[in-house]
Amino acid sequence: MKVTVFGSGYVGLVQAAVLAEVGHHVICVDVNEQRVEDLNQGIIPIYEPGLTPIVQNNSQAGRLQFTTDAKLAVEHGEVQFIAVGTPSDSNGAADLQYVLTVAKTIAQYMTGDTVVIDKSTVPVGTADKVRDIIAETLAQREVSHQFDVVSNPEFLKEGAAVADCMRPDRIIVGSYDARPHDIIRELYEPFNRIHEKIIFMDVRSAELTKYAANCMLATKISFMNEMANLAELLGADIEAVRRGIGSDPRIGYHFIYPGCGYGGSCFPKDVQALIQTAETEGYRPEMLYAVENVNKRQKDKLPSLVKQHFGADLSGKVFAVWGLSFKPKTDDIREASSRVLIEQLWAAGAIVQAYDPEAMEEMQRAYGVRNDLNLVGTKEAALKAADALIICTEWQPFKAPDFDLIKTQLKQPVIFDGRNLFEPERMQRRGFTYYGIGRGESVKLSTVK
Ligand code: UDX
Image (cartoon, rainbow, N blue to C red):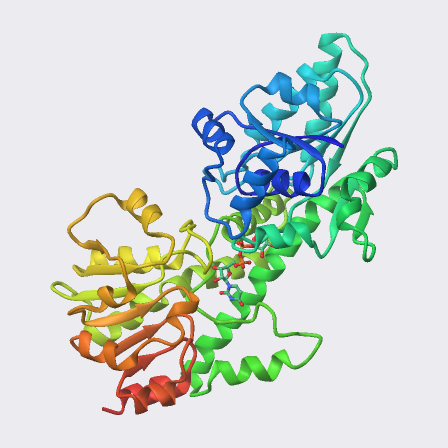
């Protein structure tokens, strides 16, 4: 099939690459000339495992092409994906200007019947707006091509985007009627062979499904973080509680890891956007307020543990920070807990020596060159003469470090672990003062001097 994808960001680029990989002919269009030029040379703007070879191989095979020429792109596709960004506006609502501009562009250049697929995460009611703009523009052009608007939200996870797209758990397809079902089936046939993954529904339900999924996952995390804080006060260990409740299949083990708060480009933005949507309807989403507030408080957890240990004035202190990205296997630092920590350490006068396997360039871009930020090339170098180690992201190489080396490098053997990588009791035996999240025992142990 001939496919057009608007947007070469996370969602658009991965979608385009994966569709080309299974044999479709894909043109991906973006307004950013530099990005398009790079992509045509096989240079990938994001770090995403497995993506580079797919983009390069399919470009060479002629099944994947990047362009800034919207006319050429629209004329190519039987289906047109809208996969452009929906950043938050100043109220936290999703800003639809890019989505609607693309809808208009598609209508301006359409040469025949078309299915327009909305992949961007957009508030309920957006498909109606896309449909209206297309209808209006076609009327102005005085052409009467038939078109369908389909809501087909994306559920990929950063760091596992290619695998998630190749083997989706479900393919949500919201449409106004059954007319586009056949073409959608054909498009997704290669991903739908083993068992039926397509779930057809109306457009509004499809749009809400995306927000409901992300808000449910964010709720699970905030709930566990709330329990972790309680466990700490009660002298219980949240890691034991996690295993205890996860064994109930109705709860399950996934997404109940306590930590220093969720970040990334999706959860914070989508929770806020659904709050906005609810408020616009005159409804107070009490649960979503709580999910967001608990997460904000949780991001303060590491800095407050540090201040509890060292005092509020951290001038002259140096902290080793392991992990800057909002989660492992990505270079993305959007809404990362590490940033809240580091900004608070700076505000209290401290110096940060940080290491991350992928996110150092992003960090440099975000904060520029500063005397109180030292980005170093290895996790060991970050420890040198630091007052304590703080872990923000659970990258694999952080999970079995050389503890003796950590002890010899740090001024004092103190670790603040925002991801509960280690066992408090063992850490105490190794001679560390160890703070985890929600580990009542660790708080008790760490105060035994
Ligand atoms: C998420 C959704 O998982 C995905 O389906 C959607 O399409 C986009 O948003 P992503 O933001 O890439 O994906 O990352 P995810 O793996 O879901 O993690 C989000 C955040 O939650 C991270 O900061 C992670 O550290 C945190 N998290 C996750 C926890 O704190 N505890 C958990 O148990 C799971």
